[in-house]
Amino acid sequence: MSGVVWIFGLPCAGKTTIGDALRDEFSRRSITALRLDGDQLRQGLCAGLGYSMEDRTENIRRAAHAARVAVTAGIPVIASLITPTQALRRMAGEIIGERFLPVFIDCPASECARRDVKGLYAKAKAGQLTALTGTDGAFERPEPGVLTLQTNEHTVAQCVEQVMGELVSREWLR
Ligand code: ADP
Image 1 (cartoon, protein in one colour):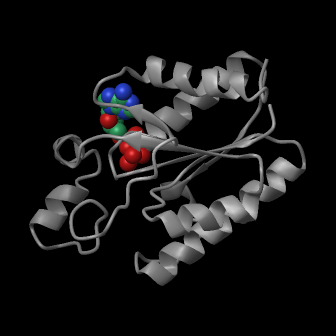
Image 2 (image 1 turned 90 degrees about the vertical axis):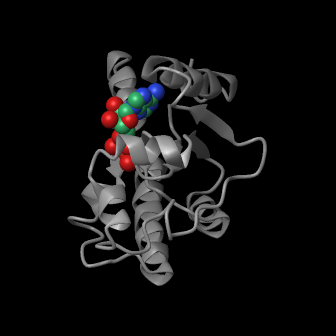
């Protein structure tokens, strides 16, 4: 397996959960992947960046370059970042090249707000946070044809199975 699985979607849609579960499935097959997660990156490589479009662009640019370095060395990557716009996803794809697999984690905003694992939606509602994607921050759905996982309808295992199936059909994985 050598490719970049780029998981994107609203906060609380399930990006980290699916990314971690996919990494575990890779591990069971003795595949070691680089795991890049938005929240973790913001504590290190992307520390100091905020949520303006300029900073979000820089955040995605850095993550995409890190993914590119790994995949060029033959190391598979599982990245999970909100990546809210088509332009940001296009930029990531252009940096990474042909081994870029975007995966949309689709979950209704109302369900994301109900899950609210980090309390961000509650903060946004209370006016303590602005530009939260899915509330006052824009999120553009991808064009049809992008691999889409419905995390409010399918289990984590079923979603992982869907990605594994795509990797096999691309012959990135046997
Ligand atoms: P994100 O990384 O998109 O912000 P998280 O993965 O941190 O989201 O949180 C998603 C929450 O939704 C977790 O509490 C997870 O257990 C829950 N959840 C419920 N069903 C699913 C599913 N099918 N796939 C992924 N997450 C799910």
